[in-house]
Image 1 (tube, rainbow, N blue to C red):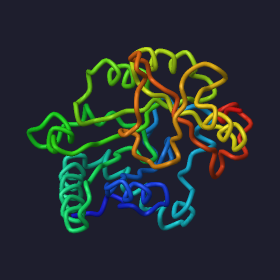
Image 2 (image 1 turned 135 degrees about the vertical axis):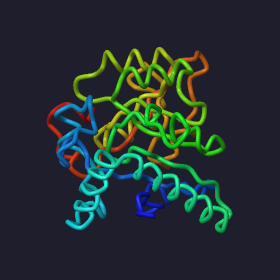
Image 3 (image 1 turned 180 degrees about the horizontal axis):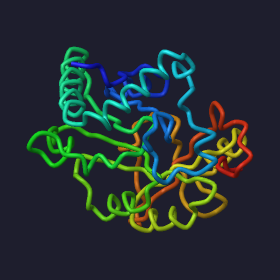
Image 4 (image 1 turned 180 degrees about the vertical axis):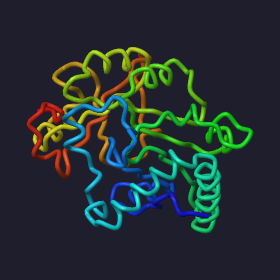
Length: 245
């Protein structure tokens, strides 16, 4: 079995352990760094602000590994998916030993439509593990709308990601019932979290308390909420409008 999942190796996912969850994340090489595109609706701002090089991603061996895994996915997909199943089973065993509930984030630094990727005789990886919650951020509008309208696997949670140029798509996602993640600069993040809304508009929840997006509430009116995230890494120097103020 080739190791594919990163298990609680960053500060934000470790916070989930206090809530009873053990998180496994699949980190691929973002954008087209591997020669294959994995972020079909990425913007210039999010590409530049990507957290791919944050934390352990700053090491060259980590970057090499992510590129290798991405090529493995595109060039030998059946074997990759078989290994992903084995990785998730290993995560389940580890979680059981720790007395935690395993959860999986498939797109740590990618935006692949995993609901459309078959594995074995199953339509997708979610169907292989119907008892296990999987979750992702996505900038692909049709995926977010499908999730909001209940047309995704029931154990797969999506949060739409706002960029500098997809406000109209974010509104579509929210109207369908999908929460929208917004990256704010430090001052704006603190202000909007404290106020609980975005300038008197949509309700805001604090997304930096943990990475467990599936645990975020939704609006009582069926609309999505704003999940506020504080700019980190390269995003702190954004000038594209990706980071909001």
